[in-house]
Image (tube, rainbow, N blue to C red; front, top):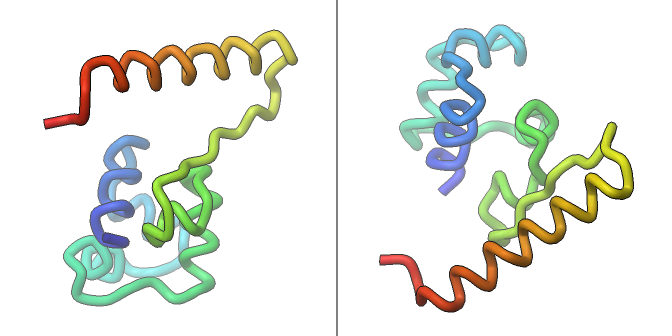
Length: 100
C-alpha cells in the first residue's frame, strides 16, 4: 500500500526516483526499494514525503482514503469553488455507481 502510494504520488508529480532521492538526501535505490515494497521509509521520511507531495501521513500510509488539499494562496471564493467541485464529483460518482 505504501509502495503504491509513493510511486503514484511521485509519478503524478512528474518527479524521477533520482530527483526524489536528492530531495530526501538518500539514494535512488532506496526510493526504488520503497516503491517495490522491499523496504519501507522510516518515520522521518514518511513525514518528509507527505510534505513533498502535500498529503497527510495517514494518506501516505493508507490509514484512510482521505487526502488533503492545501488551500494556501487561495481566496475564500476559490476555496468555495473547490468545495463545490468536490461535491459535484461525489454526487456524479454516487449516481454512476462504484468504480469497476
